Length: 160
Image 1 (cartoon, rainbow, N blue to C red):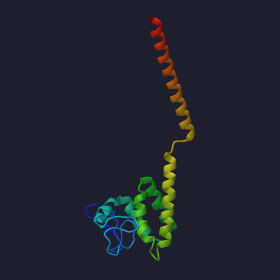
Image 2 (cartoon, rainbow, N blue to C red; image 1 turned 30 degrees about the vertical axis):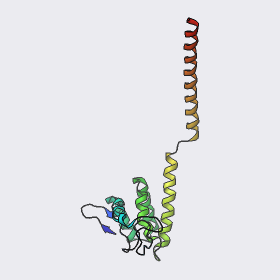
Image 3 (tube, rainbow, N blue to C red; image 1 turned 180 degrees about the horizontal axis):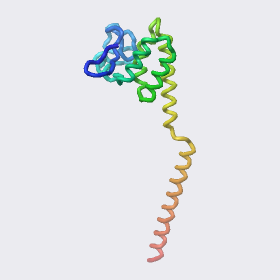
Image 4 (cartoon, helix red, strand yellow; image 1 turned 90 degrees about the vertical axis):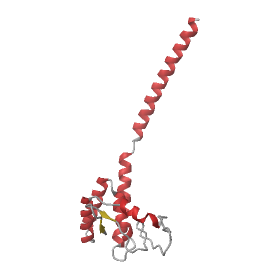
């Protein structure tokens, strides 16, 4: 990982110059990643788009320093979830998923990121009861408008 000059943030850097910064796949000279499709010309832009805020960058450094500590990973992932930065957490773990030493824990963290993202999506979902109630309200208003329109039409017809 490299520090981004001029900010207190961290930029994802590929492990080698011939690895995809998004998914960590070997590029072997290709112009685009065969796994995720990220074009080589967008590698720098991707790295800039995955800058961690300073407080999360410090958490990530703590994770790297104590890689085998499951608690550090859990704290980092929860803070990323609270900050809406699970994509940035995934960008840190994804290149490490194929690593011989860190791969198992990185893959477990990626699974946890998926679970946290699903949890966040469920929180934002509208319950079915609310949808049913809203539909009933809309139906009642539509019927009232139709009845009012019908009364106006009948009165206009009878007035002639």
